[in-house]
Image (cartoon, rainbow, N blue to C red; front, side, top):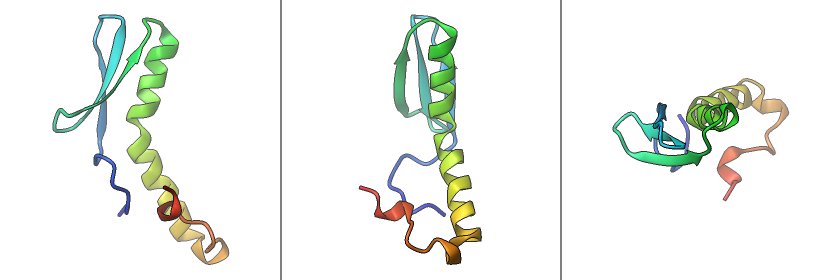
Length: 78
C-alpha cells in the first residue's frame, strides 16, 4: 500500500471533445485537464491516468528488491 497522499486510483481517462481531455478519479473527482486536440495530448492524459498503477508497480519492485536498495524510498520524496 502506498504511503502517498495523492488521490487514490484508479484514475480514468475521459475524452472531452472540447479541445482537452480529462483525468478523473473513480469517484469522479477531477485530477487534471490536458489541453490539446491531437493524439499526443490524448496519450499524455492516458499516461497521467496510469500514474497510480505505475506507482504501485514501482513500489512492488522496491519491496521485491528492497534489501538491495534500502536507501531508495518513494516516501522520502516531497
